[in-house]
Amino acid sequence: MKYKSQKVAYWFFALCMLLFTLQIVYGFIMGFARIGMDGLHDFIPFNTARAVHTNLLVVWLLTGFMGAAYYIIPEEAQRELISVKWAYIQLISLAVVGVVAIVGYHFNYWEGRKFLEIPRELDYLVVVNVLLFLGLILGTLFTGKRKTTTALVLSMGLLFAALLYLPGMIWFDSQVTDSFFRWWVVHLWVEGVWELIMGGILSYLLIKLTGVDREVIEKWLYVIVGLTFLSGILGTGHHYYYIGVNKIWLIVGGIFSALEPLAFLAMALFAVYMYRKGEKSHPNKIALFWTIGAAIVSFIGAGLLGFAHTLPQTNLYTHGTLVTAMHGHYAFWGAYAMIVLAIISYALPNITGRKRHDKTNGHMAFWLSNIGMLGMTVAFGVAGVVQVYMERKMGLDFMKVQNEISIHFVVLLLCATLFATGITMYIIEFIKYGKPSDEAMTTDTH
Amino acid sequence: MLSKSQARAFFLGGTVVTFMAFIGLTIYSFRPQNDQTHHDKIDAQVIRGKHLWETNNCMGCHTILGEGGYYAPELTKVVERKGEEYIKIVLQSKVPWEPNGRKMVAYAMNDEDTQAMIAYFKWIGGIDLNGFDRIVSPLSKDKQ
Image 1 (cartoon, each protein chain N blue to C red):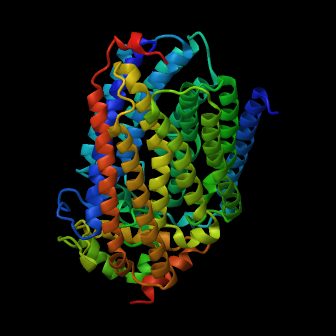
Image 2: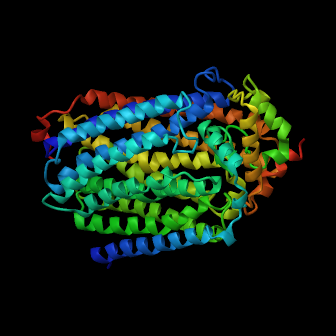
């Protein structure tokens, strides 16, 4: 750790761990409900559990991105954060808004709009919170000694993520128009600007972990984020095939979303190539595993599994089925959860001064969570494909099909247990690192 | 070999061009002559129905236009498949509706709200979904 203010990141990462744990708990509630064990229905019905599960995902990832920015930007800009006090205020207000939203979901205080369930009143608080965050980050960046491409791409991703939240706050009388602009937020986040954030974090980690020249890494970062936007912006069209808008999206969405895996392929090749090219043998092997893992798994989850049902001819049958859940789980895990876990794994030894970065527990956490998530993805995939054939091809009733595929949710729950064990080990390691220490200022050699 | 400034130009140029194309296609999609939703048929009842749909987070379990929770049936064309009376019974039930063992929240809706929900479903059912309506529509209807 080079700057004292980087310690702020630790508390964002700690909040991440808490929210991630809760997300997994609500995931289990949903999984058990799907096999008929819905004893909590009167208190936490499925729609509540789902809203909490997906929103916690979004919030813990955003918290992780913010923590990453607070860690990376001072080092890239070569100065302390412009205000540590306001960064803590931003963290506390973020946590308060998150808690109010999550509690509110249990009392019907929400908007039933997938991924954007936070009520409008709280939306305004989110905007204020994010503006404060951006003020701190951009203020630090532009008053710093240098403005690196890595820092600019990361900041640009965070700025666009904030701007793109706004279309989701507009009320539309038409369900179709509402859906259309909801995807401006959701799609352009996860298949657009969040990839900028991912690219920025990945680039920073590769520079630190491999020792490859910054100029080389940042050049390819531009190419990757260029490919992301080139395919991802018009690729939004794959959400518009069958929601009641013009057929032109069948062509535009089909072509450009078919190109979307290229960005993820480039990212995976980039990470592996830089790792092989690097001459530096960094001691933090766990961070390296999560970093390279994120690039590879995101290609499989977001790129390949997305491609599997992105063409209009396929999507006609898979739209609105568990095939989407298959793709969604592995994509979010690979592209965003793993990169957040990577930056946490990298930053923790530097913030706390404790070099626990090659412990067996850490490696076990990586492998168990990855094998668990792969198993969950396969279970969702098999359930989804069976659902497509039985419901969409054979014309069987929805609930009859759900009963037929419930066995796959037993498998899913078993794999989820493996996944949760891995994440528990990760969190235990996080706790064992202890709190940030000023002594870390002298022990950081990387 | 590609230089860093060329890579930056590729990023910025590609982003601007595709974003402009995206905005253009959005405007094109919402031109009145391209409307596939019978937008003019959205009345106060349909809007009330959409509001109820959102405030009760029906999408958290059901899907509509193929979007939602995948836990309960797709409701596009539900009026055509199940009929108004069936929908009324489900929405006004004071105990959780439990078809095939999967529970729904008991909404115990009044007549006014029920009619708004039905109006909303009818409007949804009239949308041209580029073929998806034919995939979704016949499913349960054929089984009745």
